Amino acid sequence: MTSAPARSSASAVPCSVVIAAKDEAAEIGECIASVAWAAEVIVVENDSTDDTVAVATSAGATTFSHPFTTIGRQRNAAIARARHEWILVVDADERGTGGLRDEVARIVSGEAKDVAFRVRRRNFFLGREIRHGGWERDRPVRLFRSRMRYDERPVHEHVMIDGLVGELAEPLIHYPYASLGEYFAKLDRYSRWWAEQNFARGRRTRAWTIAIKPPVRFFSMYVLRAGFLDGAVGVIVAALAAMSVAAKYARLWEVQRGLGAGDRGLGKVPFTAEKGRL
Picture 1 (cartoon, one colour):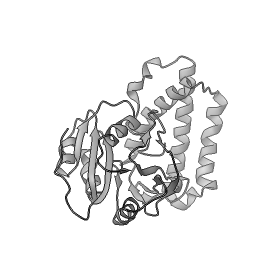
Picture 2 (tube, one colour):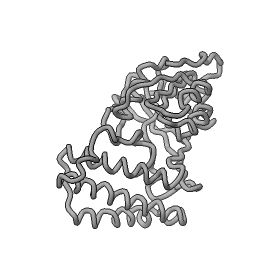
Picture 3 (cartoon, one colour):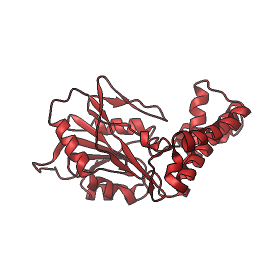
Picture 4 (cartoon, helix red, strand yellow):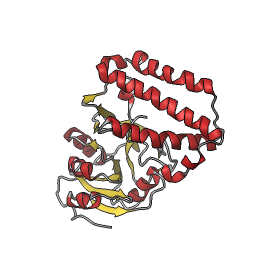
């Protein structure tokens, strides 16, 4: 473990920020800088082949390596090392703001009845904020008391909460994909893992499902949830979502027929299930 100098500023917000990262040298420094107001920033990394650890440490975070199985387990390992009562979870592709700092400071310094808080994410993709199509409903639990932990499922992990859940007014800024190439790379991994996980839970599909679900998803996002108001990017987002649905169910069909066995295995889980909205 590499420890950063203690944050001694009297104005530091008494909470621990937890960031799980792999090969995020290009993002991690700016991410840490955006939450430098926290009294402690912990980065848990696994198998990085770039300068993630060096950049994170230089930016003022305490860093350590932990063998990867799921993103929930990574975060739990960091939470277990946290010094403060409140945890704020941030991803490397997210950014804190001054408004978020002030709101978190009020909560952690007071007598909050809620034990956890959802945080709205403002999602940006292809140079534009996505305000419709369902992305505007993105509100994961990210601020919570340190006694809580994530479940350790591979996909759609969540915080196991033992009390009331509130919602912050201030958002995190989220840049889920640097490019379409990054989106497609994740789609390949995620759809394979999704199929494996759901097959293990007894889920099955038919060819007609693969034909029907993608256009339904497109219609839901683009028309019913007003994705068209996001212009050309709204079309692309809805089309990519439909493609994601097709890929997941096609791979589930492949798995249940005993095909493509060489593509299956827990070691190929995508690094973070929350990074985007596949």
